[in-house]
Amino acid sequence: MYLSRFLSIHALWVTVSSVMQPYPLVWGHYDVCKTQIYTEEGKVWDYMACQPESTDMTKYLKVKLDPPDITCGDPPETFCAMGNPYMCNNECDASTPELAHPPELMFDFEGRHPSTFWQSATWKEYPKPLQVNITLSWSKTIELTDNIVITFESGRPDQMILEKSLDYGRTWQPYQYYATDCLDAFHMDPKSVKDLSQHTVLEIICTEEYSTGYMTNSKIIHFEIKDRFAFFAGPWLRNMASLYGQLDTTKKLRDFFTVTDLRIRLLRPAVGEIFVDELHLARYFYAISDIKVHGRCKCNLHATVCVYDNSKLTCECEHNTTGPDCGKCKKNYQGRPWSPGSYLPIPKGTANTCIPSISSIGNLPKFNRIWPNISSLEVSNPKQANVCDNELLHCQNGGTCHNNVRCLCPAAYTGILCEKLRCEEAGSCGSDSGQGAPPPGSPALLLLAALLGTASPLLF
Ligand SMILES: [Ca+2]
Image 1 (cartoon, rainbow, N blue to C red):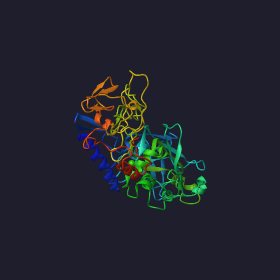
Image 2 (cartoon, rainbow, N blue to C red):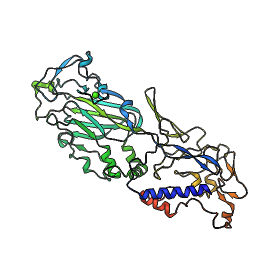
Image 3 (tube, rainbow, N blue to C red):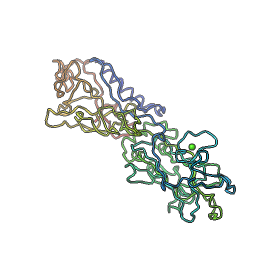
Image 4 (cartoon, helix red, strand yellow):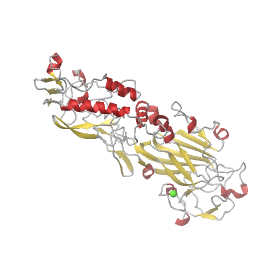
């Protein structure tokens, strides 16, 4: 059978490809949800795991400052020049566009000189702490794919916490602490991401790497996503298969890189000395010229497109799923429990499509979570798969779908989808007629599973 040969070759290709590690970065993009393939029965859809491209997520966020009136310029005030704390004749005036520093200047196009930036009021109420929360909200779960980079126009703060929320801002967890002195500020030993490992990658650390004030040229603070990915994918992120494999099997790891909101808590501005210079409090303020957040909509591997409509991000769900994150099955497609797509096996993953409901029979069939392209399976248990339709699950070899419940097969064929020669069952086929996809425990699949570091082949 052509289809069987195709599947055998495909399985072999996947296996060979798995041997050819490290993977080029282009692998595992999962940018197609389905393709049409040609079989003896004509064109059929082949479904695969898919996700939107990673993109600049700052275009889609809402920013909120707390306290709301903390931006400088209302009333106008003077502040000291960046980098020269004794030149204190710069002006911030919210009512004059050239002198205003509103929050949106943290997200505009950079690369021009001088930079555009948001700026807070100065620390004129010292010793009352000068603290600002900057909340970035997407109203949508997103998966971070690159470092969060915050560029300061002022000195980098002496104390800062980056926090994340997974429930639209109801609860918050720290992502990383930043301080000139971690022990003093947060009672934490200073660490850098390089001190972490695969086993401690989820540890929340305090770093002193990014907190020196005016005395340095560097203005940037990172939250290191890529360094954390590198524990799994190698220093150049070439072995994305390994990373995707881990993300697939470890929910905590996947959730670590998933957010609905981020919050930058500025707790103490750059002082640069032991004591605050009370005679020149206009030296102390926060100013941020740019914030970079790269990520993708979380669509549970059921969509490649995420649309921004009415100030709202929504996945354009495939695989008969629906919801903002493709988090449930469409009406009339609840023939088995919803499940996210899977990155495995590399490179196409598994779509885990929702299948039509079977309202005409009493009990829903039991399905395993992973349900790859059905025609690649040796379907042997009729109770597991008494479903067919003309779109998703095709009866094969000329069989016809009867009430979405079973395939009516031609005399020579049997099996749920008429995928099997009747003589095979009877053991009376010639030696050349029984070729099919490798069974789940075949050496090829075991090798693939071993290469991906999983305990067993993922077909069952
Ligand atoms: Ca800017």
